[in-house]
Length: 193
Image (cartoon, rainbow, N blue to C red; front, side, top):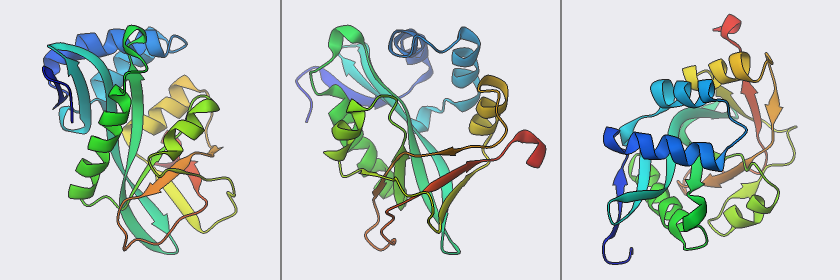
């Protein structure tokens, strides 16, 4: 539940300038070229949640759809990206409300899992309160094959690498999906697509 006058909305285009500004404040190491690319190529209104304080965006996140392959089966999943709060609006529970709402939306959309990759060590503990588990053992049968435009362009053009494995966090949304305790994420370069 949000406070009176506060609301959570999808990421309509007119909120994009405020979100770009928030992104630059929250992720200052990201180059302008990357931010422009992200909001041009990755950003999707229907996959973005914005927390409004009055009419002003103060927090946001994206739910990027992808597939997860585990033991020969494919599952719909969502990657939480760009989880951010304006510096002057932190520690007020806005991101917690957005994460809880995003998990409900992902469940309604039939997502079996949600993943994220915390950018700082303290965030691992923060995300655990929402049921996310750390995936530490990459020697598993669970492989997330990411071939969407966002991630393969990011890894080639911005990170300067061709293949990698990341350790992140995962939350099972669908109780019928198998529990995943480990995950290997393969980012497939442009030349393999």
